[in-house]
Amino acid sequence: MKNWALILGASSGIGAACAKKLAESGMNIYGIYLRKPQSVIDELEDYIKSQNVEVKFHKMNAMNEEKRNDVINNLKELGKVQTFIHSIAFGTLKPMLSKSNEPTLDSKNIDMTINVMGSSLVYWSQDLYNANLLQKGSQIFSMTSSGGHRQWPSYGAVSMAKAALESASRQLAIELASEGIAVNAIQAGVTDTPALRKIPGNEQMIEYANKHNPSGRLTTPKDIADYVSLLSKSSNSWMTGNVIRIDGGEDIIG
Image (cartoon, rainbow, N blue to C red):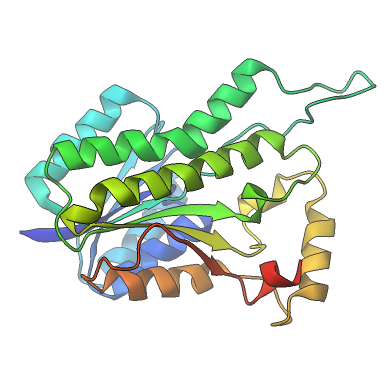
């Protein structure tokens, strides 16, 4: 029975870096993506295949229940999910209040952001568990940020989603502990990815992180992928329910 890494948000940034690194370590890759052009997917797929592992990419909205069921059924034919990575960056970036005519968050914006970036971890984990695709030693990683406990302009809905994601990760950790399955949230430092570049004021965030990070640089997608790959090699589930900072010491500086 072959082991697979299922990666939501596999086409760029941290998700793509994790796909490459896990392939290098010998794991088969099943990537979920939404918006990247086929040329980008083809290039990533070629690299993964060059590592002598199997790879499948599925273009879909991660919140589409019917398509999620298709992926689950496909995975049941392929093997087991050793590593599940939730790395979705898709949310509404608007302020909650405005004295001008600037658009503000409404219920649709907030619900969509929390569902896509937070609650979807639960739905995918439920389906993987119910399909018996997770096994003792499987590792689940959700990608959070310091936005789960800090605020930036226009980041309110995403901050709410990150807080929900961390809470869901802890709850899943408790419920899966007896199965020998670990669930941890990865808190990356400020990482220069396409998602970061969409945040209003990202230039100031990058400048501040470069100046104050005690390691003297930004976090890279490879930094995250290196640790995810390392943790994925272990079948020990004793480290679970944590928010693991991979940020060069950035968050403790403030």
